[in-house]
Length: 411
Image (tube, rainbow, N blue to C red; front, top):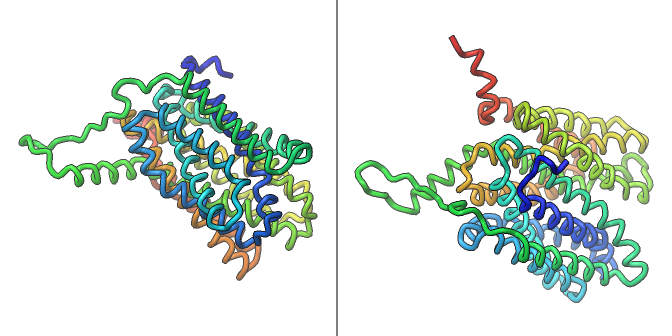
């Protein structure tokens, strides 16, 4: 599978995010149990999750500047080590605000890792295999998310729940040391922004020039931004509220609902690479539209399914489609963006992801409380329907679409 990837730096990033995904998986598996044991209410736990998303939102744009100022290697190393310190300190904290502070920096260092890794991959991947490269990135993280929770239980039982956080910190530290020791410096000129000067030699006000560049960049990557916003909104909502819907509306035992994330991750793990290959071959936006259509059908299916086996199949297919949109959208962004703008574009991309994570839970929770679980699922399906329509309207944003349209417009 890796024979198409000749740059050892890409394979190094895969190993680093595999370790990181394992560290994430261990900490995520025990964090709610740890907070519950410390006496925090479910409302408190939900609010603390919002601090994590706030850290992502607050740090997304500054990370782009840090990448251009200090390099992807330096930013990725610092972010991995920062995350290790944060997760290692987590079990030593007791008060609400100290934990909220830690959750904020958990999100801030996490987005530093994501933007750095995505920038390295897009800088070093060829235009004809960007989705392939980013899909394997998603696969590496997904494997870690599967391995981490499987390891968390034995660690917590054999040692303690606090030890699971320390193990997570140790693995993240190993990833940081690996990146510092082995990742090559960024290619020369990788982050040099080229602001066009107007005729006559005057450069104009720098702030206005950069503002124009940012708006132009958002316009260029808008379909990718919508994709990551929708996924952040959907992911943050279903993690919190789908288990409640299954228990309260469908009568599924609580112990059984624990398996739901595993089926979703399995779908992502098994299909992300195939979606990436297909995107590189026929067009990223076309594949994203097809995946969104199938995924929203699976969401609607939950309203009418009443037993767990077909629900598990629907969750698996939703993971295979909706979760696979993320690496394909990142690849599309890499195709339509100049290399010098990757760090800035990836920062903007993650702002939209954080925005989805911030808005999804409160809106979904309000819909669930006032109108019921079916209405919550309908509104999530409507979000993906809006995405499908958006990708149809702006189909020409994908260079592959313009190439396919040439024979029809010729002559």
